[in-house]
Image (cartoon, one colour):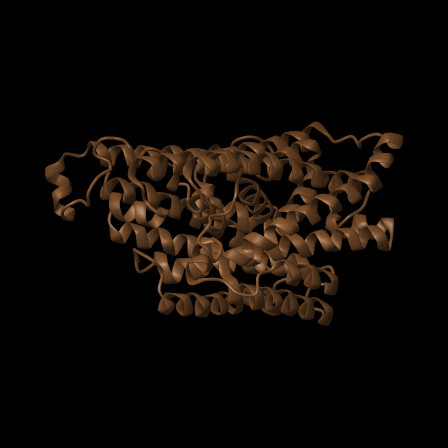
Length: 466
């Protein structure tokens, strides 16, 4: 941890302009180049929780599980193409600005509230993974690590915001690539000598079911992640689109390869979290390499989360336009500290009678379900008649479907009938709910477009259309 802190501290700038704090530009106002954008976008999505999830899914399902989690990285293509069209056609400076102009201020605020929940989840889900390398959940080593990782990231993010996040991301991406190479040096000879473990057809089918779930969610999932979408507005549109395609390929490749940690865990017959048990089985060198990867991935996601929170509260929520002000600068800093504290509170659930803290994979699948309505809201915004009513008829059904899945997981009571299940294994319910739910939200959006204007008038005048 100390070595990681020293490297990041050397990479992070010691000061930033007010504009750079929110937009990531240099003190002279120069936007980041293509490869800095690629590195930052990719490493910010190689979450500590993503590495742990990919390894766990690969251990349970084999290559299909690893491919399934890598499927989420198609989100870069969805977001890149959609935001390219938004920026080139209308010139909006953010997704909330687009929503406010297209659907109205209330719809933009609902969207901001949804992505605030996403940012909240990003804090605890990454600090938890990092903390587990220093002790079992709830131990003193675990809590000290959580506090130190959070405090250090807050410290440099508070000073330089998105500018610092971009520059540290570049170094963190290089470090992650080197460390991944170190992991492969340990694993590949084992697979070459012993071959890949065999998985049952049922296990492989369950992995492909998860891949189907991920594929359905990539049409909506990226839009509720400001860590990703904020980076789509800091360079010119062509550079952004090229950068997002490259970042998706690189990030997805990383996650697929990290899945081999879990596959090796299956080969050895290990139980428990493979991103912990497998490195420990190879000895201290391998354990330190994976530990450093987790520090890198957790830190890069946390600083991006803090920078996005600052922008969300100080710029996006009030709907600010024009150059950022000193007042917004300090408002964003305060919000950064607040999310750092509140975002770690779910880790205390271990003391409330739960066997363990909140589930990390559930933080991805459930939040992705709740925002399924964002797919038609952004991807079908060009339809004639699309307006405020269309937004609500797509947004709220998605929230209800996600709430139903949350209740199923929390209570064990079946909310959705068995015929909704699609595929095989533990994710068949999630896949079916997302598949039918996306169709329902899309139909609702289309219905909102077709309702006569005289009925829509009851909701008040529409904002200016695209």
